[in-house]
Amino acid sequence: GNSVTQMEGPVTLSEEAFLTINCTYTATGYPSLFWYVQYPGEGLQLLLKATKADDKGSNKGFEATYRKETTSFHLEKGSVQVSDSAVYFCALGASSGSARQLTFGSGTQLTVLP
Amino acid sequence: GAVVSQHPSWVICKSGTSVKIECRSLDFQATTMFWYRQFPKQSLMLMATSNEGSKATYEQGVEKDKFLINHASLTLSTLTVTSAHPEDSSFYICSARAPSAGTQYFGPGTRLTVL
Image (cartoon, rainbow over all chains, first blue to last red):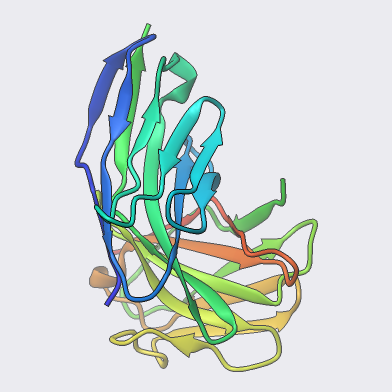
């Protein structure tokens, strides 16, 4: 079956540091890949996505490239801010009937210190 | 972006009672809603997929008689945990998908504690 393995947290960085959160997946077929972010007290929000191999998703300074050869979708940001403190979830989307189901990683707590 | 609400945000109940959780899409019509369960520091686990006007499709290992799902309208789905037990204590999250979009919009979650 499908699965997502995500870098364990928590991760603590100083402001303006470089961020990498690793994500690898196992899937049949050609899934779409997502990063979701959950700020304290809020629901998950889509941060970025990639639908096919070599696609790069980007948003708010975050980037992730769909690497089929390494089955990875690592999240990166060149310079984090305090406001980036949140939980980040990597997810895989595969069609199932009429719905596109998501399989999530375990989440990585990021804390950015001023 | 699209907004999905959940009510209540947290609930404490006694063992053996039933609890209903509501999930509403506030500014769009959702033909499909999903219910997830999340244990501390673990993944969101899909429990069931619910399509408006039809029976929910449950994931393997999820008891459909214990977790009753109703998707009676395009903006509301409910999850009822029947005869709750302490092991049902968890964080329940819903998401909604508009017909024209592939993106799921998530609610803020409901924390259930069964004493």
